[in-house]
Image (tube, rainbow, N blue to C red):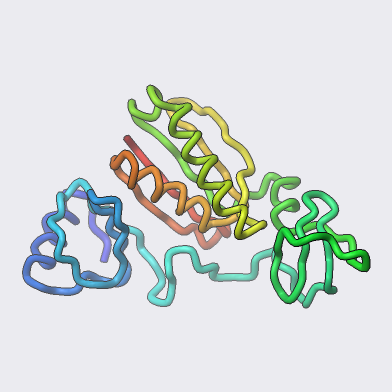
Length: 210
């Protein structure tokens, strides 16, 4: 279901939600409380300017890739392996920060390859007056989110933070990290949050305006 603008979407969806209908699975709702709800009935009052749409494949979960990721190994990696750049260890089918085994194979992990090539899997764009006035505070929250995610998932990292005309653009090696950063900002400061998966570009685009 696609609407011409947010106001049209707001009128239609609020009407359907208050009538007790489940909203379409092709939509993502960013709520004033900071929750993001997908595919189930809501009981929370909504404001139309807090509703945002993302056209999605029925089987998509907003960040599911539609084609092969060129940075994902086509075959099984030798184990144990260690990234020559960041020293992350690949063992038992996953990347960790465990101690480097003496018999490990020397490779480069997908995150370091993306950073080297400048090939993000997630793009977070920050805009608005609040962003301009509180840039350092906002970027501190973004970096904290990366630290938290990276500790558990070595392939979740920031690539670059770039100031553009009236916007701050953050790129990440992992689509889930970009989305988590956007959700953390929305939870802390509200504003407006949208997600869009670009299947032809192999990345998710997250926009937060405040």
